[in-house]
Image (cartoon, rainbow, N blue to C red):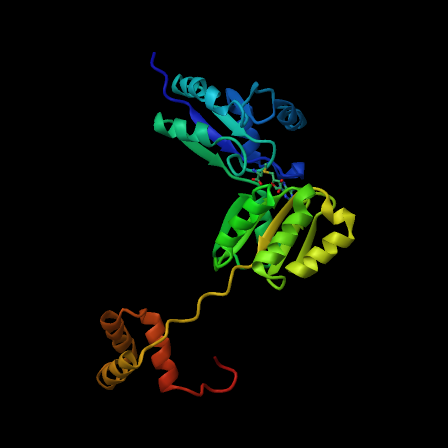
Length: 289
Ligand code: SAM
């Protein structure tokens, strides 16, 4: 009998609060033939708490590549494998990337079982813009390399998210202040979903002061979030385009005039539309913008 390929489930587990393990995750872990865990002893505690007896093997950053071929073979023979890390979503600053790649290349179905991740938990309650963000994982441990990375990110107009370890937090806050300026808004999210969950919100300088003066804030697991750089100023509209727009506006409705001027000038349509709108109606009624 030819068995169909098994499925590789990528299963998110709690980042502190055991109640965050989803019902679906429990079922997948219970029904899998094998659990590939970053640390089998750590995962055993979680499994015990839910009466799950599925066998586990260790797949961590030091042995993942070596383990992958046999795991893919087992998947091809029809076994189902659940991949978990110590906490949160596997692959996010955690092992699993090589296994997922190899499984996809071998035609195995890879199914996510979504759940906790520190970066999303931190972002969702940070109060910083969420429409665009960039997750940078851990910054380099050495200050020179760390500053270089921060310099590369300085102008990014998106919320920046980093994982950081407690023993580097003060040095990293110093580097953030030096590179981004001490006034850039930031959030330090600590011990998420745990008893001492804390959000410190303020400028880099203010957060640094709080952390410096309170050793408690230098402990535990933490996520750093920084507001993005201000978006670059709107494109300047040169006099020739302004004249062109004025002529088109005499003949066409505003939207069409802006669209045509955009095609001719290469300036973005919404920039020209906004500009034309302001020209036509320079003093909007009080209370409106
Ligand atoms: N894969 C995990 C995830 O999805 O969040 C992240 C694993 S990474 C090895 C561990 C880092 O995530 C910690 O050093 C910390 O920066 C962050 N982290 C994990 N749990 C956290 C928590 N409960 N509160 C704040 N940060 C946490």
